[in-house]
Amino acid sequence: MQYSSKDKIEKNYDVIVVGSGLAGMTLANKMARDGRSVLLLESHNKLGGFATWFKRAAGEHIFDVSLHGFPVGMIKTCRKYWNKDIADRIHQLKSVRYINPQFEVETDFTKEDFIKVLNQKFGVTLEVVKAFFDELTNMNFYDNSKMTNGELFEKYFPGRNDITRFLLEPIVYANGSNLEDPAISYGIVFSNFMSKGVYIFQGGTDTMISMMKEELLKNGVDIQLQAKVEKIIIDNKKATGVVVKGHTIKANAVVSNSNLKSTIFKMLEPENFSEVYLKKAAEVRLNTSSCQVYMGIKKGETIPFVGDLVFTSIDESFSTDLILSPLVGSQTFSVYYPDTRPHLEPRYAIVSSSNSRYEDWINLSRDDYEKQKAYIIERAVSGLEKIIPGVRDKIDFIDAASPLTVERYTLHEKGASFGTKFEGLEVSMGMHKEIEGLFHAGSVGIIMSGWLGAANYGVIQAHEVDNFLSRLEKEALRSIN
Image (tube, rainbow, N blue to C red):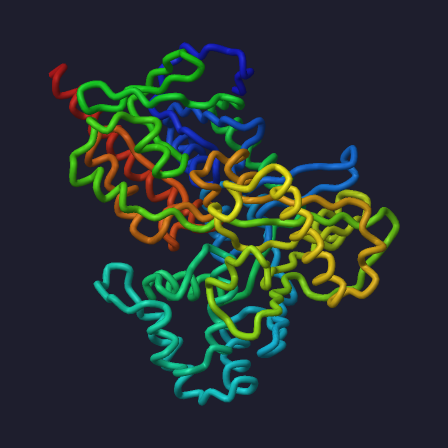
């Protein structure tokens, strides 16, 4: 059932899930289907976390915040842990383009096409290309390799900044990767993301989350929105519930789908953890944030097909520092054609995304903040004009979001769009070893980022929670006998 935001929930649960990002929702759905009693709490007024949307101009325009493409594996995950109707709406994008001073390329984002482009466009021998892809395929998460992304590219494509740009730039936008991150994080994501193309949910994020909510309720998950968890209750090193608006709700297990650092340092007391664990948690780096510019096209106007995703840059060479620059030399345009939401009146929308640093925004005065927003809006429109001449006159709604916007609506620490860096995964997975019955699932480490990574991490942690609850049940039976 869905509780109203004013209800005081008196039931006890097998598990309480704090936060309804794709990891939290998928975990809740799987556990409810497996017969567990589940309560899903969300601080916002809608489910989805960063997988969200909003309407403007009295509903004339709908904008997807992060529906810009995900791997083919999302189909399998949704079919297995959600339902066939959701999985069947996942469709492949037709065209991904790069436009920058070093090269222009159009691809369908499949491994076969990448091999062809590297060979024919960039002049790399098929032998080298095959060796590169073989290394990616054979990378193992448990390998103790110290190779970085930068070292990986230099190994196969020495001195080829243009190839680094071609291979890494999409992953930077997908999960905040950089040249200093472990190559294993790139290899696994690349193998998933670029093996069989890029996919999108037909119907928009609003339709997807609505279908997921319906599935959650059907499977018996209780839901409460506008229910910000103030504290996770720990009793004798065991998680026993949460506090919402001063009211205690009890459970045998608690799963946080909130930001990892917020969970540890804001919802819990430090004395609940060992010094070693707290030190590791303190050293976890947050990933970068993002800015977006939302552009709605006037009713009745059309734009030509220019690709689904267009990676653009005016920077002469590639670096992850330049991608994060407040000067916004690099931005990606996600173009939403009428077939994104075929059930609605035909409309077009374009979203410009640029990676950014929270630190470049947080200390701005109100006037400077508005000036910087106006700057990124103008950069987006002028950049889009180069791809679609005359588009400026077709736009009747435009607005921008900054890292502060991300922080406000998702409660992510410092507006981190992609959770934490690679080391966050170990801390997340080790939480239940510190406090019995307390688990974490969400965007941690580059592998567990993005829609597919988050959903799959929810599944992984659902197994851990279920094993814990089963152990409690066996112990209770033994005590009776």
